[in-house]
Structure formats: C-alpha cells, structure tokens
Image (tube, rainbow, N blue to C red; front, side):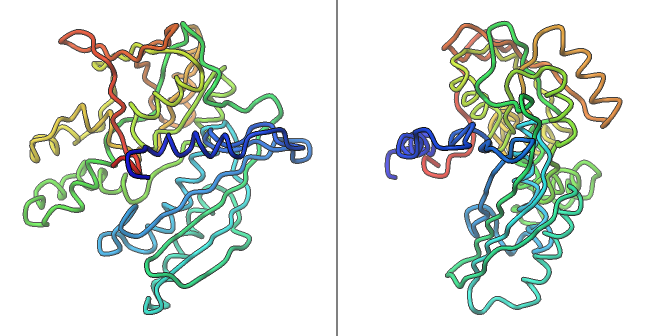
Length: 334
C-alpha cells in the first residue's frame, strides 16, 4: 500500500466486487451495504479495532473498548437512517492475555448492545500476535427511507449534529503524561473529552429524524469532517462551500489546542472519531430538523455550508477562501 491512500484501496476493491447480485441494493463504498431482507432493507456493516492502530490497551479499559467497538458500527447504521438489530463479534487475542480481560471486554460489548437495543448473537475467536476486535452489525431501514452518501444536490445545506473535535482532543489528553494534563483532565470538559474518545455516542435517533426530515445524503464523521465531507461530495458528484466560522467546536477543544500549541480548527476539521452525523438537507428543511433534534434528543444541529455544482471543495474563513484539504485519518496514507 506504499504511496496509496485508503480511498485508493477502497476504489480498487469496489471495482473488483462490482456487478449485479440478487438482492443487493447498494454494495461497497458507503457507510454500510443495503440488501433485500423481508419487508425492510437490511443494513450490513463491519469495523475492526486493532491494537496499536485503533487503541492502546494501556490507555483504555477492555470494558470501554468493547462498548466502543459496538458504537462505531452502530454509527454506520445511523448514517443510513436505520436501526441496529444484531451483532457478531470476531476476537483475536495473544495467548498470554488474561481471561479476565476478555470477560471485561464482552461486558462492554453487552452494555453497548443493550444501549442500542440490539443483540449479539454469535462470533468467532482466534489466536493472534495482537488484539483484534471485529464487530459486524446488521440493521434495517424501511424501503425508500435509506439515506446514502450519493444524494446531495446543489443548493442543499450541509448540517452536522453535536460538536466536533472532542474525540481527538480527548485522545491527546489520554496519551499525554498525566502530570502535564492533570489540571485539564480534572475539569468537567476535560473528562467529557476523554469520554468522547473512549465511549462515543452513535446518533441513531438523530439519523432517523434527519432521514424523515428529508436528508438527501448522510455520512458519519469517523475519519474527520473534512475527509468525510469530501467523500460525500465525491459520491454525490458535487462541490461545497464550507463556513469555517460555523463549525461547532466541542467545549474544551480550544483549551487543549492552546495547551499543546495546536490549531483548534484543524482538530475540529480533521480529528476524526467524533461519530457525529454529517448530512445535507433542502434549505427549508434545516430549521424544522434542528428543532426536532433539539426537542427529542437535546442534540444540536448546525448548518455549516452549502452544496455547490462542484467539483470544488472550498473552505471560507476570515482570511478568505481556500481549497478544503482532506484533513483526517487514513490507515495507509497516515
């Protein structure tokens, strides 16, 4: 994979796996697949948590890791406007890992499944040099109600749930020497930032509300707002004008950025693992959708830009316009 990005790899795999198949409504390339499944469409998604790539076991409890492994998959279902139903867990572990660690991991998996009203119904285990937790989640969505990445049109408004940058700032606090960040972590917002990284929230209800409000496209912010917005625009064949001043930066992110001499805006744009929902809506649907999310879920919905004819991705800030760089996490490009 030297010299190639994760998106390059996905593009090649999509071509290899392309073609018509019975019962497949949407194959590789979106947050999840859509398949024929009785009166509804089935949603299928899988994610891995690999030791020393996605987590450091010295810094995260196995319980929180199990919970997160479920939540990140459920977030993909939420991004389609669906509901999670069942899960499968494949676990690879070193031979010397204590059994108590595995039991605590599955306790977190069970808690995550209970939180999203789904059942873990099976899986597999294997021996490996490092820990790998792979969770597959199936969900469902009514026919005609699924929201994909490919439906945005010029004039649609770009909206995002919640706030951005919390997980990346929380990771920075969790990995810094304790003596350096003790004052920051002792604050309410410091603890919230760390929790955002270790126990993310999948916006299932919000995804369904956005779908029913007329969302034309949607993706969850897993690899960074800028990168995931670029993916949505590419799949929809459109461009964007993103208002940097409108980005909802999570409380405490600016304080963490100042402490580590970082750019708070860059953290919000490219930090990743926020698992907020990024969606496009017709202009007249934004205000009703925002009111619904606030009333039903106490979740903010912020308008952050507009979809254009494309293909230019433009960020508009106090210093003028510039090309929106694909800030975010790429497993192969770094």
